[in-house]
Length: 279
Image (cartoon, rainbow, N blue to C red; front, side):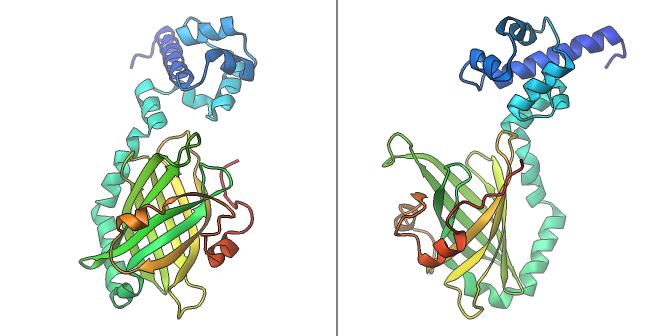
């Protein structure tokens, strides 16, 4: 890129206006954005059109409104688009196929091959939802053996706010499970919208019982508009084999006092969401 100052200034203005338009396209209206930020609509239109660059103070106000750092608003538009939409998630696909990750999983598999069978089968997975406030998400979770590896997959279904009898969103996750010292570690990738990966660690409170596994899960979204989160989670063993339609139909976002949630899961999750998110 040229070092000419005038060209660089114009390039910064163009990148800023393009990035700002992208952000505003996701809002209900530009007028609402202006009111919330406290910037005159006429002045804001100049920022959108690239006719004027905001002062450093207004850049901070705009960045704070969208939950971004001020410097990020001046990023190259193609890179900014990738960060916003999560298109860089392909990098995580390459990671899970890398020789180093495969060697690690092979080492983990060899070290716990004897214990594999103890954890195979279908589970209900419970944790507070990071999307639906004060709702407990029950997903259908399955651990199965694939050669020397333990793999797992699970399905999340979110009911519609307008019509709870209908499903608004479905997410599917696939990943690896491995057992170390009676702990089950999981890492998986969302494979429908390709917008998240999660980590988990689970163990039974009584080592002789595998009916309930209690742990922590952390999710990291590929798009900057969804915050990372961490929360308690429970796996409740249901049956051997793979998931069937009967298990999938029970997946939903439940009222936190829903009587179908096992008492052990409710006691562990607590009376209020313990969701940990960046402030």
